[in-house]
Image (cartoon, rainbow over all chains, first blue to last red):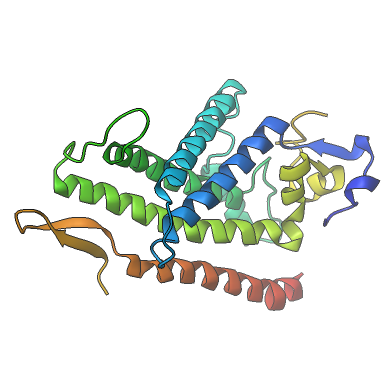
Length: 214
Length: 50
């Protein structure tokens, strides 16, 4: 991993906690769910046919549960607003053009934009996906294809398909930026929960964020 | 290339079926272009700058 030390050589005092186990678990459950949904949704489109519908909607419900728990947990911890892009982030972006760029708090403007994009796309696919479940037989109900008019169903399918395809681009970029050498500390923190004190001081304004707990 | 897919219902009317899957390569392409562009920028310009 990049940074000031390998995981085993970093002393506990130098570890700055960034993501708790519950947050990391939710992230990885969501990540695997999105990948399974994209794979099961798009393989039939490219000609790989299999019984994908049940895997798709069950995984969608798992993602829905993960997103719901994430939203409730972030509100309960009082951290709901910390990751949203705002005026202060525009100031940080503009300062990058100067010789004295400002450092962000816990999340960089790029990370906030990525989160915002994923939020919009995942919520769009979840909401439309839930509505589309009315059209399939499940253990809980029989399908009803007449809930909406044809045009309304068409719009729902357009939104679901567009958001899903945009999620492919977003997932590609998210994985790429996570694996960039200069960003590997964030990947490590999403795996192990921490970054080093040196990484925090180099990349973050410690007056805005200096670790979630020590 | 069409952006939307249409089909005919039981009454022969043209109905919207969803987004065209012809757009799929474009979304993959956007991802590839941004990744390659960023990687090239970081390799040849950002490091030189620093």
